[in-house]
Length: 323
Image (cartoon, one colour):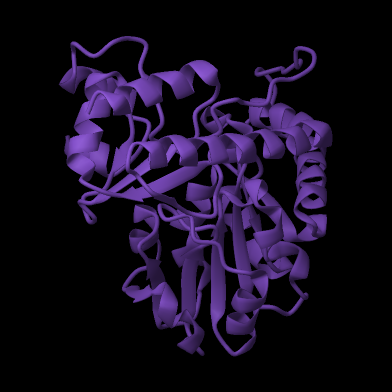
């Protein structure tokens, strides 16, 4: 059970703990878009050849255009977590701080970093500050102006924008000036629902990008990640439709939860956080074959991802009603 409280998506472990739960499992534990992007036609990928530098650059140009920045400030990564795990190699200034609560990875991304509450980040005038925007698991979203002010008063800022595709107005990237001491990490898999491709990006100054390229080498991402990422980032119609659909389903999720006495919070439409008797609700849903995300450090919190369709909504509604 401990593993289910430190990371979402562990349907395999949930099935072991709840062998009599109905199948298939409904996974609402991750916040990943349950309706992934699908190519209009099959993508031709040659896994026998190394990805060419030109193809990687083409992907980075498409991503930069989607993020609202220049390609020389963007590097493709094999998942944004690799970017987090590589921060310590970039010679960032001390002292290092990370905002809590947030991703568990943030606590280990910077050696000797100390936690800080989000309410206190405006007081940071030096060193390095790591935070997520929108945050996970509470979905809190800060305006870019607040974060820019922190960076411009002396701190080196690292912003984990793993969920920013769903709330583009919250992204700091389009507002950055060349000399702003800011590193941004973006995830492809969250919004596009293709987490298994392991594709992410770092947006930073050219010297930081050069240091990361030197660390990861000539082929940081796979041919499949390049092909899917390039086609998906060019599909602006899908992105616009997905944003509308997810927002509408988040509103529907709020209404269902409220009907069952659960008040949802958060500005990220891909998931909601409820403060409740989390263990009891988690257990009830798990026995119905629905996996949600509890937290070892906050026993009253339960994060619930937005369902994909009517069938998923009905299944959640019925499971909550059996309480």
